[in-house]
Image 1: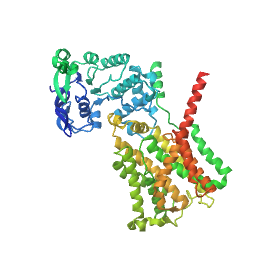
Image 2: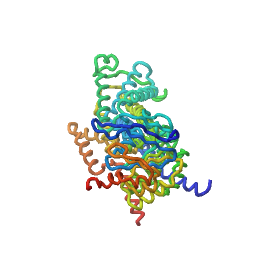
Image 3: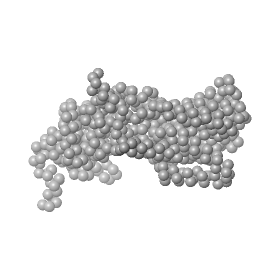
Image 4: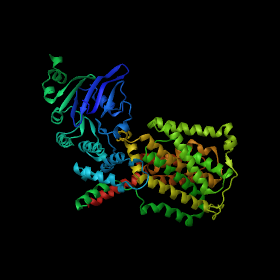
Length: 251
Length: 336
């Protein structure tokens, strides 16, 4: 697959004697909706940390649109179009929703180093925030401090933050974790509406969300790829059911 | 642009907190003018207050806005004081030029030490900033440096030419008072510009969540070093002001005590608002002076008690307390 948006090959990660990733290979085509599932401790978050550059792999390579980014800084990877969210909501709690999103626009347009003028008059920031918050239905919350928001809304703000970066590839680490059923619906609606050209890798335990969002699924177990396939293939795979339902332990 | 779009823009814009100058910002300066005409014999004390306000403002910028927990901010104050003293002794005794040189030295100090210490956070950062300040103080006292710094004797015997060639520095300290007031106003203005800028929002973002900032593509350490240089330049101006007004620079201008005092001022007044620095420094210096006048031996008790009360009843500082009352009043008014 020469036109892969993001591909990793032979990625391994050891913490001392603990092997949390064992020669993982994965390729995301442009516009792919790919899910990464697996039981707790399978190394899913570690893999996202390696892809986004917060962790260096012990072995293996990462390519972004054909360019080797294995040793590229996390900041540079964002500039190249790779954005991520965190398993536990990672925002700026004392700042308002508008300021949170505004920071992403500042970063995208390189305004975060500008020492003069007012943020309120920085057109790319305010215009961008207005359009994005409106399209996500969050404009009414613009002046609210993130710390004062319920968790479900914080999750949406976090998605808004990465969308403000206009990434090519989006890594979502358990976006629905800790959300009530109603909020999950809102989140899924939002994710289904994302532009088709955007490549998405989502880690998620909520299978109904995974099956509705993803086209392909990779199952990770104990740091290694167990299998990869379409949604239908994975649903039919008895090994996956074993891993998730633990029938081996009972059988 | 349609009406709807304009409304959306306004809604988004109003979501960004205002940090601009307002008419309320004139109050402290009006107060200073009132003190000049009403309590003329306290001018030297007033000058000390303004030196400490300048220093506290510089620390608030780094700590309150950027989350740089520094216990070694005195290094900038001291470098500025020595730079101004040496400049007056050997180069020119023009006060404004001396301040400018001190500011440059302060910024360079930040540029030199910043990349070393600002990669860390929390307790490590606290200890590293403290270590840098201690090392510089030891260096100033080292035998090899004595021909330059004067060692324990410090720098003295230098004089300043009249301010702008017009106002002689008088014994009553009138010129020094107005000069200091102008420096505080300048510092406050610079802080306001920084805080209000896109950069100002970025450093608050770093304070809240540096990892998220990195994952937005922002070079966090670079931004922090920039902030450290600005804050260092302002702290150096405070030190230079002190050196010029007292015409004396000693090792105590590099002592940990000054870092600690500035921190206490911010705890009293509240961090991250600039006003807390003004209120906290004023209370700290005036109370220290009055308490020492009443009991020259146990005056630190007054500061200790005040600090305990502040931590117990106003953990966000006096500014936080006022903001809290304001919110409650607002809520009460909305209900009525």
